[in-house]
Image (cartoon, rainbow, N blue to C red; front, top):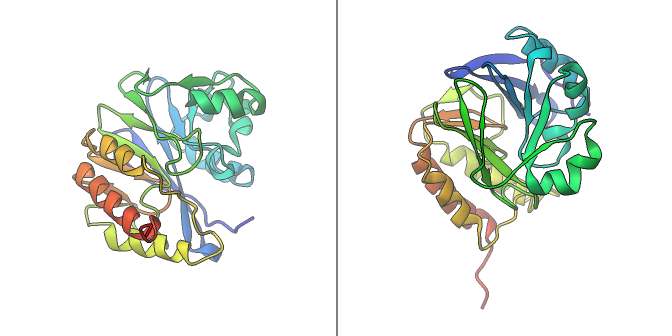
Length: 249
């Protein structure tokens, strides 16, 4: 397991808190997002080993036992490894994931049944309303999906826009150079192809861009404030350039 710095908390949109832990040995931030509302929602749980630090950070914002929804993009240890620990800490919480993840992963893994969402399904937490966006194989996994909060126009991006280093919490600057550098290094490493490029990759990114997000809540690296639709169109081009590989003869 990596060595993590203590969490750092920033509010990146109204009621949307970014809780960041930096793993210096791999030069990567792990960012988790808490939406403070009548029914608080935590997006991504982190590893089991980071649960005590993340719980302490959440406790500075609200009573962890009040968390009602625990959401994540896809079944992976940094996304939902601590899910059951959070379900124990928040006795009324329910997991939120894609219908596919509920059917093939979470029904067996979690100590309480999940709420499995189909593309376009909505979840109200009080002042905030979330739309589920099915994104199968993006960033990776058959079960992948993202949440879009319609009031603040915040898209919870999971591994999309992956950046390296202990960077600022929120930026309005173009992320393209950072993202290209991180994807290129990953492609040249034993972790190559961590994001598959499929015939549907660009279609999904353009569907997400059509939501016109104003904030991109990014799991690894700075979150982004500004024209999220344009950023997603740029990401589509970057991914094609870096991940698609040479055209077939």
